[in-house]
Amino acid sequence: MDAPHPLRVVMVAYPGMTQLDLTGPFEVLSRLKDTKIELAWKKWRKPVEDASGLKIMPTTAFGMVSECDLLFVPGGPGQLELMADVETLDFLRRMAGSARYVTSVCTGSLLLGAAGLLKGYRATCHWLSLPQLEFLGAEPVAERVVIDRNRITGAGVTSGIDFGLVLAAQIMGEDEARRIALAIEYDPAPPFPPATADPRLVAEVRERTIAFQARREEAARAAGARLGLIPPA
Image 1 (cartoon, rainbow, N blue to C red):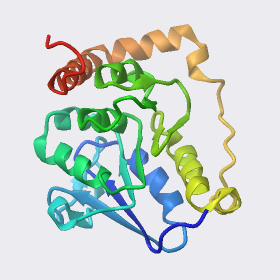
Image 2 (tube, one colour; image 1 turned 135 degrees about the vertical axis):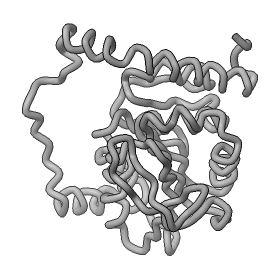
Image 3 (tube, rainbow, N blue to C red; image 1 turned 180 degrees about the vertical axis):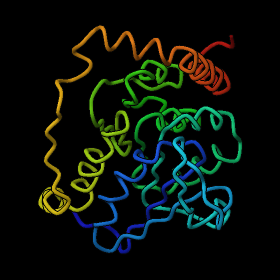
């Protein structure tokens, strides 16, 4: 499938994001021919700091972008602060209006949902937050990458490379996506069995994040209520 030339990609880069949500897909998409990627935030020329302290420099500001072909939103703890942020949600809606693809990784899908962009769509998210998509009118799907029409969402953090390759195949065809996978030596061989297969570990991770997940759920419920998708609390 031929892509427009150049393919205009806007990736939102915000404080408190999880950088791998962004940089995994960035690595893949940057290898697509005739693709221009902008990292957008409210302001630019000043780095944003991810949840672990890594600083990334935006290349443009919201007000400097008129449209895009592909909108991408990463997740991370900072997502919580943006669930009711009018400037960010308006930007997402504006970009989605012209985008061929509206996409996310991890809890970036909650931001898309808060902007009203996942109503009636199948979507995925980080496994701890997956049920929260229901509050935003989406159908939660526990899969690594979910495609529903022009909405493409990836699960938690490390799914970003899988997501990027699936997206590359949609845009440029499977052969090109496979060439990129070969070029970046994408040949995953996890050192452990899937952690979700161990109920003890699942329980421990849930316990460690229970307070934050409660706040995240509250924000998702509030966003769903503002959109008229669920009753107010």
